[in-house]
Length: 287
Image (cartoon, rainbow, N blue to C red; front, side, top):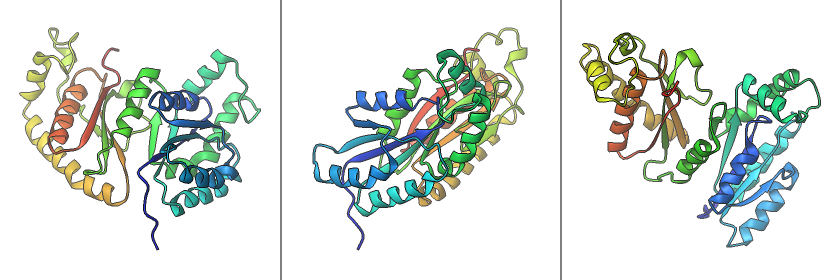
């Protein structure tokens, strides 16, 4: 017999050491969640039984560390326990670039939990958490996020519309600053002429009317946008069918200020009109 799902929400927050788990839990606390940090994996089934019986524990966030590979099997079993109790849960994996993690450990002078040279520890931890990352419902790249931006992303996840069963995040970025780590789909729009080489447009962005008009008038623009939107709309039902609740679409140009910003705005507007819950983030627009 299939367990009936409860109306509450449980978010399991894990990921790389130094990627912002504690900050994420603070955000959940601000949203009114009951938060538990560093809950031993073996206690998740018992804790699940407890919250199942407490009506006021409808919104819970658990901070879990996964630093030893032998814990993964226990973690998977704990997720099965949540499912068997009919509890709704999502796993959030916080990631960051090696460079950002190294800088954070250097600035805070904290010892890495694995107790090794920080660079070597990060490399080993990635191997340990590889399988867990693949099972996460949402991977968030915190490399360049402020606490406010992280809170905005988490807030958007809580507003997930069941009618569409998916939260879409549209990110514009510059290839010169690297790919967003949490991107599910990536589109390169560097084939469009670059407004950066037009003196009057160089200091503007893809949010300015002059840049929008410039890109919109390019011969390839209209057909590209039509076909790209058709491709996204073709893929979304398959992602939903596979149970994916969050999808990040990244659109990149050279510097992330002009073309990618404009295209991202167009994609976000179209998907919003289709009834999806959409958030936008222009990562490199001010660089």
